[in-house]
Length: 378
Image (cartoon, rainbow, N blue to C red; front, side, top):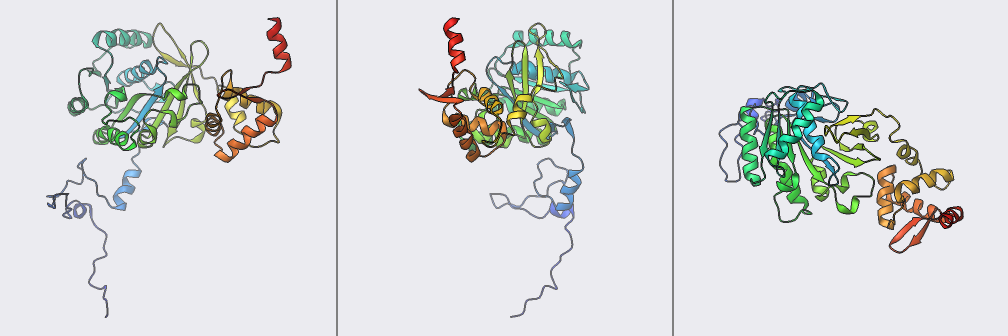
C-alpha cells in the first residue's frame, strides 16, 4: 500500500489557529476558542514561547521573576514575619532595593495576607518599620487580616484585591494556614496547595512569597531546601526558597537555598543581616567573609586534606552536640555539594583521625587531653 504525504499541511500554525483548534475538555465539549492573550490559555507554539523568553522580568534581581512563587523559611522567632513585612513595605514605598537586591517594580504596591496577627499587632509592627525606614504610609500596602478565613476565602479576597489594585508582591504569612490537605507530608497535597497561588501569580504577573517553617529535626542542621516543612512537594513546586538563620547577637543570615534563576555564586554566599529590635528592620552588613568557613570545607573530598580543614568541617557540623550518622551525611552533602558516597568516606576519615568519637545517640567531637585538663582546672 502506498502512503502519500502530499496532501498534508505542514505550514506553521498561527496563534489564532492554536487558540481555536477545538480542544476538548474533560466533558468532551469543544472550547469556543480562547483569546491568545487570555491568562487561562495553556497551549502555545514554540515560536510564541520563544517570544515570551525575551520578556523575563526580575522583580528582585537576580533572585526571582514575576509570575512565580517562593518561600521565606526559618525557625520560630527568627524574624521571618518582620523580614517579609519589610519586603512588602519597601515594595509599596517604591524603594530601589531590598537588603541590597535591586527591585524592579511596576505598580509600587504589595498585598500582605496575615493569618496569625490581628489589626493591632500588625499596625504596631508596620508603624515601627516605616518610621525606621523613613517612609510614610501611602495606602500602597494592603493587608488582608485572614485569621478567621479559610483557604477558599483567602484566595477569593486576594483575587478581588489584585483585580482592582494590581500589585508587584503578595506575601502569605503563613503557608501552614492556607495548606489544603489532611497530611503536611503528602507531596501531592503540598504541590496542589502551592498551585492555587501559583495560578494567581501567573494571572496577575506578580511574585507570591509564603512565610513558612522548617522541620524541627533540622533546627541545628545547615540550611537546605529539604528542611522546609512539606517535603519535596513544596520545595520542588516553588521557584525560590530563602532560609533565615540566627548568628551571634543581632546577626542573622539569609541563605538562598533554592533559586531557579540566580547564579551558583549567590546561592553559595549567605547574606549577613543585622536585626534591630527597636525598628524591627534588617540591614545588610556587606560582610563578604560571612561564608568563609563553608567555602573552605566545601573543597574537602578525601583523606589527603590538611587536618585543620577536617577539624573545621567537624566543628561546623557537630559543634557541641551529638549528630547521628545520617544527619552527618545530610549536613556534609549540603555544605560541600558532594554525593552520599563521599559523605560516608568523610565520616570514616573523621573517625580514623580521631576528630570525632562514637557516643550514645551518634557521634560527637572528641575531647583532647588538653581540653580535659582545662575542664578539670576550671
